[in-house]
Amino acid sequence: MRHRRLRGFTLVELLVAIAVMALLAIASWRGLDGMARSQQLTRERTDELLVLQTVLAQWAADLDALQAIDHTEPIAWDGQVLRLTRRGTRQPDEGALVVAWTRRSVDGTARWLRWQSPPVRTRAEWNAAWQRAAQWARTPGEAERRQETVLMPLANWQLYYYRSGAWANALSTDTSASAPRTVGGLSSAAASIPDGVRLQLTLPPGGALSGVVTRDWANPLLGGGKS
Image 1 (cartoon, one colour):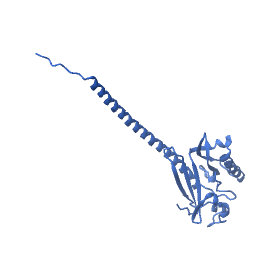
Image 2: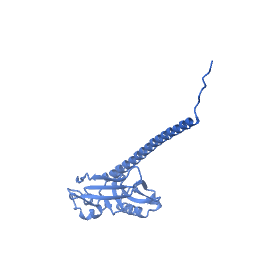
Image 3: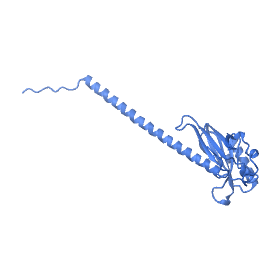
Image 4: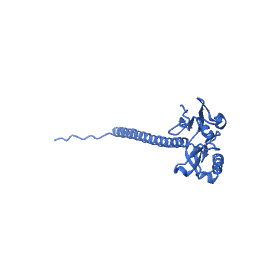
C-alpha cells in the first residue's frame, strides 16, 4: 500500500503568511491607537469643558452678588483687571468681599486668575482691599498670591457694558461719571452698575477647546441686560 507524501508550506508561502499577519497586527494596532487617542481627546475636552463651566459659574455668581455700598465702587474695569464689590458668601453680616479677575502669565503660560479679599466691614478696609486687588493684578506679592486662584489658560479677554440700549467697550464707559445719581430710587453706587456685562474669552489654540466664548450677564436690579 502506497502512502501519499504529505506536502508542507513552501518558504514563499510562509513568508506571505507572515507578511499578512504582520499587516493585520499593524492594522489592529492602528485601530486601537486611534480609539485610545479619541478617548483621550474626549476626556481632555470633557475636563476642559467642566473647568470652563465651573469658572463661568463663579463669574456669574460674583456678578449676581454685586453689592452697591455708598462711597465705594461696585465694579471697575481698567483693561487689565476687573474689580468687584460683592456680598459675602457665608453669613449676611459677614461683610463685603472685594473680588478681582485678571489675565496674567503663570509659569510661562497666560492664565485667567481670580483673587478674593477677606471680608471687609469698614470703608477703610474696603479701600485697602480695593488697592490690593489692583496691585495683585500687576505686581503681586506673596501675600496677594495666597489669595488667588489660577483658573484656566486664556489668550485674551474683553468686557462690554450694556447702557442706554447699546453695548459698548467697558473701557469707553465710565460708570461713575455717566450713571445718573439715582435710578428708580437706587443709590448712586447701585446706579453705577451697568445694565449688562458681556464677557468675551479667547481660548488659546492647541487645547481641546479653542476659539471665542461669549457670556452675557443681565443686571437683575436695573433689568436692562440684553444679549
